[in-house]
Length: 177
Image 1 (tube, one colour):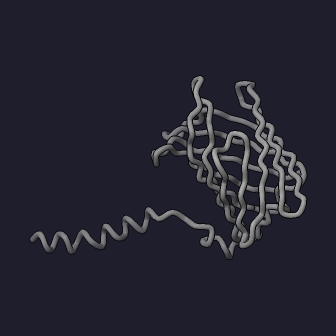
Image 2 (cartoon, one colour; image 1 turned 90 degrees about the horizontal axis):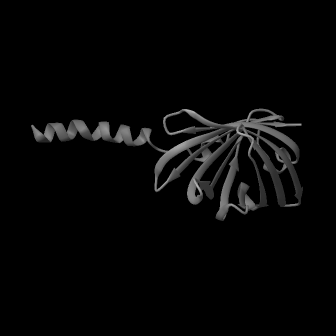
């Protein structure tokens, strides 16, 4: 009886584990339009976003005005955030394009170096952000996915976690001017 239960449970466990596999940028290799980060994030862009808590409730809304410039493989993304409560924030990313569609990046509130990869219409960006919370700073991990929809619009969904625990998500829509 135990052997039959074990045999029946094994395929179910394999299916469950397969369903939990995370996507990779290679999953989007054939998707169009093809994203060239240097081309899309060049010039002025506007973005609108929300932060949702782990239960899905919108807890913060914001807009972003971005001024992006590249010189060869080196880029600067200057982001000005305005939050629904009136607070403002600025983040300046310094990016470097590497071979094979890979990128690295740094910003003042990013701990260490961000790493990313573009393929097809997608870009996956992973980094640790030093996030101010209730008068202290908490380091949280971001698994950030961007999807080029057309030459003007990109959608972005980032999952935020700490110690592997899901804290919330950021959803953004970028529009190139």
